[in-house]
Length: 576
Ligand code: C2O
Ligand code: CU
Image (cartoon, rainbow, N blue to C red; front, side, top):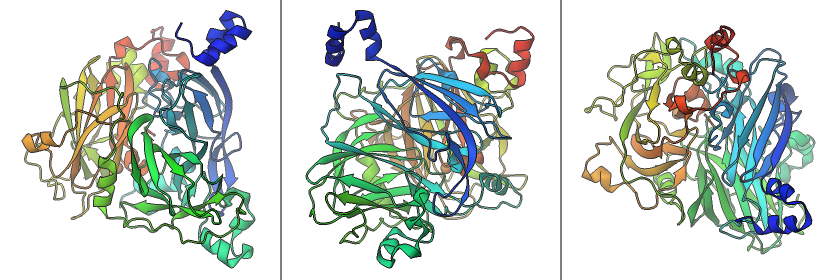
């Protein structure tokens, strides 16, 4: 019958019909989203919380389960949506939670129910996807265990969860106004890094330990109390680590402990051992750690900034070896984060990520290649990020509903460019810095294989090229390769591609002045965002939209399209 062993045992005890339902569960959650006072780094601010919690509640399920989240928007004056980052939403594109793309934002006092299947075990998270609400603290963990009776391809005794983020003291409203102001006002670096929503501004944890309790609010305020991970000696732990930062690229290390990387973005990878791991916004990993060090001590867990000149102190947590007291100061100093601009270190880590044997392999060739030049540009004096010289703006009516209903008028007639000029010099600021705005919708035919070349380049200022982690909704892609300079598709570039064991991921970085080549199969009808996961960059237009076989999308729930032109069309009797 193909039923897992545990289910068979349960079958012996229950009626057969019960059993089939037992194997995959429906998991119900009732959430209310509201603004609330909170002190993530011991300074009191307003965060967007869920059911009075920050970060939001952890969702834990098994592969194959259906998640039902009945979400009430209790923000007084703003819409809201939640995106389930890394969940492909196969057959349920309207539950992807992207405002203006997959659904209408949920109005204040209204309720929307997300229903979707979590089909793949792995480490995921969820977050707001409207304006910059993620940066206001609207996020939480989503962990999918293997289906009942199945086993992970590695062993461990316990699990630790680390949801990493960064935190600004300015409200997201101030940040959004600054980013779209003329002249431009940069929001600067975050004030704090948070582990599981907790950090300490202006009071390092190490100082709190050495200088005594009175020096630090962290000692008295549980909302920003240092995170302690209790472990037992000589055991192996699975650390689930995910980054939902607004801006920062991170590096995680644990003093004196090696980390074995076993999972990335919900796919198993060929295990490899490192001293520290890089996480770009949108990344998630599982790493195994063995508590094989001197048991008389605790050890520092450190998370620091990479890829930008760090102005934010590392976040620290304590790996607490039992039976030591949690408050016992580690004997050794925290690990030092690699230099922010040591890109060789970053590349060495990223290039080691390979699929574990048994991972689906990519088709040998692609049907289409889309080349996307990432530049910073200007529009009427506003600074924008652009893709092939077009900066993305989202429409009043979400794409999924309007395309499904055939409301062509809601889309720009011109299709975005498939490539950019051959001779473009990626080492210089753009010769034509003037960009336009557009909806950047690429229409993909069903089941075609698409290659995307992400080409990084110099920003507006000389000698500046930033890291951008690109995230694709609705799919995993194979990361075929990375290279420095302009991608030419010549023999040398081809030689850099890995068709043998490329990792399946949903987020991949482009390094400064470099390129990254991704391949995916357009096998999931829907409308999917593909964008830089850095919140201010997305806000400044750094993304495109893939509209995929929308005619094959099933019945879109009315509540997903109850705004703009689709609401008007429904009232006039149109069908979904
Ligand atoms: Cu986690 Cu479109 O993002
Ligand atoms: Cu970016």
